[in-house]
Length: 158
Image 1 (cartoon, helix red, strand yellow):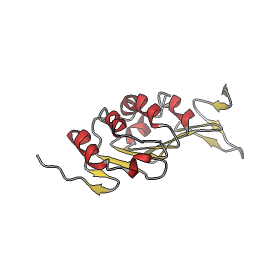
Image 2 (cartoon, helix red, strand yellow):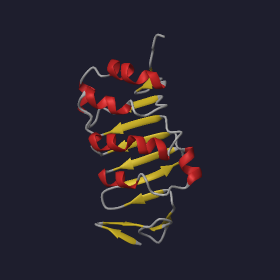
Image 3 (cartoon, helix red, strand yellow):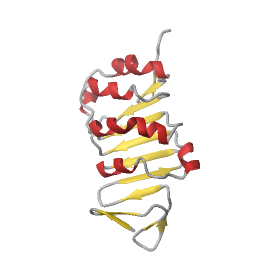
Image 4 (tube, one colour):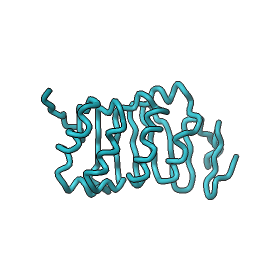
């Protein structure tokens, strides 16, 4: 295992607490976790962002259709969105939980995600949910095929 500050990482397997191992589809440490679980890429904690470019199992990475960011700052997420789409080309559903999305300008970063069809911004930990942001998101993202926001269908006029 290779030590990364307070975290440990191994490219092929990781020893977990009771002698079990995790495979190439997961990385974790004291304050983060990044894993592929079915067709969902779960990204928890700020430390997970630096592992987006790791050598993921190619077939598993191609199965990912949903990316869920939790407990991260959106301003850092926005810097790696293009790399996420490159590593996980079929990702079209994005969910943000406690990511501190607080202004409409941050929605602009999502316009870099080609093929974005579903967007979920949870109320908890995202101050923008107190504002009328849905119309702006439709305006900025419908050209990529946005179909749902927070599980409600988007109506656009062509």
